[in-house]
Image (cartoon, rainbow, N blue to C red; front, side, top):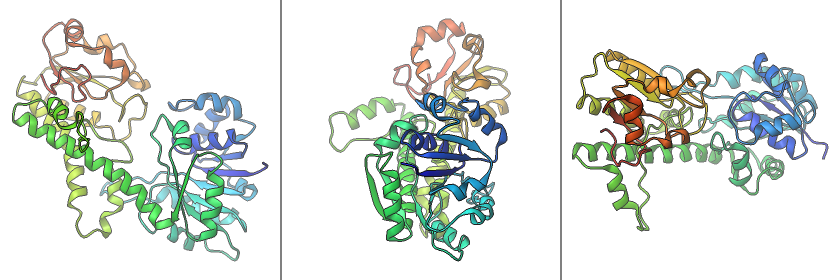
Length: 398
């Protein structure tokens, strides 16, 4: 094949993508400014959980995949893919500082005929703006092709999930489709702004559905009824069912992506209301716990500190909001997570003498728990908050 790619930003999005292209026969330069991160990858150490990535890193690091901090490799590449993060600031405004910081080096090293792909989540119109900022004396091509994978299953889903292709012109779309056809089974071609909107709409559709599930759980509890029983009545064998279960909805994407739309939307109540519901759901749960026990001085065990099931990523995890709220109630708080190094201690120590146990994340490792097991491990009839119904009791707080 003989084609080369520079992937700028080799984190949780860029690294699996780099390895997928290396496996497909591309020479991949993984460019990052974090020297410790680069050193680990050069020594074939995976920095996070990603199914199948460890084997590919072992296979390709130093040969088809070269981790580096040197932007000059961009000159040697046929394609450049930007996978840098786009968080929000303290005022919930989009923060493009990571992308903007690399534009001077990128402009200095791009060459005629290259395809540049933006994969970061951005507000509508950003791809066109980047085209203007990179404007030079020769022609290059530019497309927005958002990542659409579930963290932890990236390599599997890169191939299975259709790739959205949004070029700033027809030739850019054609080149991006040809590139991604090497690692995915299907490409859906449109324009850059439609692709930008599709990415945000996807995340917001899921986030709003989760908010409805959480709000209905609150209403069910206020009526003294089981949301899980009601979900069975709504969804079982009904072709227009599909109501989401409640849960702690968090993470770096769902939490903030709606704010990329709010500066241009005249009616933003649905997005902002969903954010308020999901972000305040942990505090409502603590209120329900307080109905059953005086929290002052009590021992609390929080199980699960990642933002979702079976991963090690704690970014924007609502478990930390739970911790802060319990501390405000003058509780002693202990935490456990089998996937996060900081919280991998002995779960027996975390549960010992606990007055309250919150199963905040439905990790597979917690599926072994039932009422009798927890009673034995805590030594008392502690209050349980199991919003995911991991234990199958059909109750959120009991």
